[in-house]
Length: 532
Image (cartoon, rainbow, N blue to C red):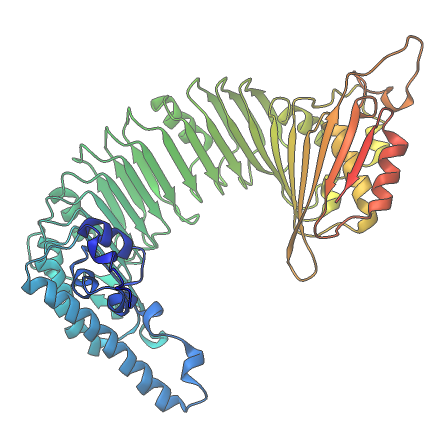
């Protein structure tokens, strides 16, 4: 009988650990049947991620048992999960093995779990954990922040922690001196803290590089200063926040989303600032203009739901990405950014002046059912005068079909020959016989499209796609010819260039015969039509 060689056991320990890092922790002990070495190696992993959802929770398995029996079974499953976690952590602690990353995800937390959780967290802390992540969910009856799990104070004095990420816990009071000298990343999501805690953490963690507070409670102001290495600051949906002060010379990215709640923002000059994201703020155009003057090296600017903005003036050789979305009072935009690469706009028809010669891609979304008129076409021609890639979002497909009578009234209109790829994303699908009208409108705007991609949804909200691929040839113009199709244009239209059409319609959205007829009747030099 041939002897089977256990090649797994011959692998170096770092490779075994790398393989095991892709497998849920709760499943790893089962792999010991594959190799004797895995009986011990799995317990030595430096990355410990405990997820109660993966390990136990499956309502289908509970069957049609009574509510009381179900509660008892869930309670027993939760206790088994915590016991499993404690056993592993305790073993590592006794062997004096350090932990690179500890992550805990649990649900239905209540007071009876606190002692066990404290013990498990204590073992992780004593194992010189570097990345510490706790994400908890609660029974609906104790979902209020005052009932959140109080994290042990020992977490705040762990010198080894480099990343602290917490979700739905609280620090109502603490009697220790916060000592996190290695902390570089601090993420608090729906955490209950007070201003004293926030300011003490900032004052004592001098090597912080990345701070994110999202949906937190209990503090009305935050003052960020004295952090020479801070590069990223994100403040999003913090319910009580009314004042933000930032003094951080190394800051590169600032993101503030205040849910349209008035908040005073004082930003001292940050010479390294490259990204500024403002969502739902109540700042004025004058305030924004002054901020941009003080931070001329901003490369990315995202303004969404800033409803106090009436105008936006930008003149910068450094600006590369700009997004203006749903700023309700915005009526005028003037952009002089020769190196701008990406431009996004969501709103109504407004005054747009652009000097963006390097623009590659544009995103467009008209809010509501804005009827087509001369002003809307002029806006479109101005907004899309440079990009090669256009993504156009709409709810109703008629929102992108320009009426023929309106097209015929444009004198003159210069088509957008620069746009080579158009991605149209509609919430509702057009009717089968409407695709030819839709394509006709898109080619009137962008007559040298190479790819037209249409994404839409059916009545069941399933997403479908149809792709048009076009190729062209140089037109042969004979003197004295009079083309009615081009009489209002400054150049010949697509009908004199289009050579081949290839359509990929896996969802059967369009009418093949209708499209075939449309292209052969309109394209003067068409040589090939393929439909798949």
